[in-house]
Image 1 (cartoon, helix red, strand yellow):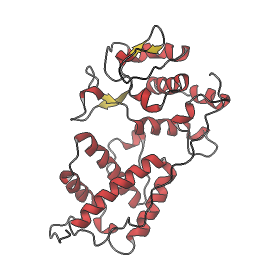
Image 2 (cartoon, helix red, strand yellow):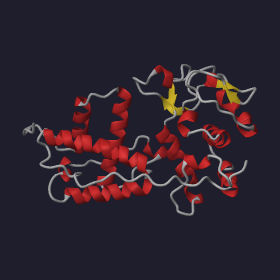
Image 3 (cartoon, rainbow, N blue to C red):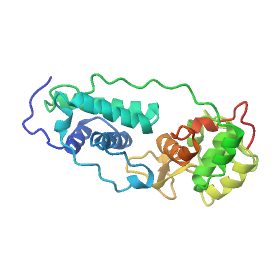
Image 4 (tube, rainbow, N blue to C red):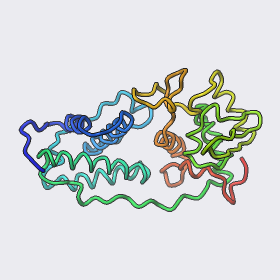
Length: 275
């Protein structure tokens, strides 16, 4: 039922806060929704979404909720979608679009918007999987100067051939460092790796007996499940979104298309060989 709310917020950020307060979300999901809706505020203000270190402490631009109302709103959103498509993979963009649609529908139910400005937007089709990197490209990527965590992630993905999600789900106590493989366990895929990963892994896990193998830079937010938090440092498990963003950013200058490579392209291929 749609009704008019005389206390309708003027600012987009306030409307986001009220939507998230009313939504039946866990703390982890609430954080993901807040980030996605903040991304749209940058895009609607015709400004690039900050990434990496630039995102820390960056406050989204002040934006009136009225930009999403009226006849110009659909074209503004279409333009924002096109800009986001230039920087984000379809999986990320479609998730963010779905989150925005949920917020828009709720705001419309409150009487804050007269119509749905995203009604004409369509999710992006998932592209064909990019081909694995060739030997020369792999050598260049794996020689990049990068933090230890990223070097381990990239090496493990290439040497094991495992899906990204399987590598990100690894815990320290899943590893058999001596035999270069994962220990058997219920629902756990058997992963094997080679010499380069074997040299790096002891450096990454030094002093840790359990908890996620690949950790975020900062402490996990309140409400993070214990399985996704390091008991010693309090840092959280590295997410797919963050891992993909870091790799794409690091390889953007190497990609002839200028977009950066994807983590899936690290998997071994017919022409990939061993690096």
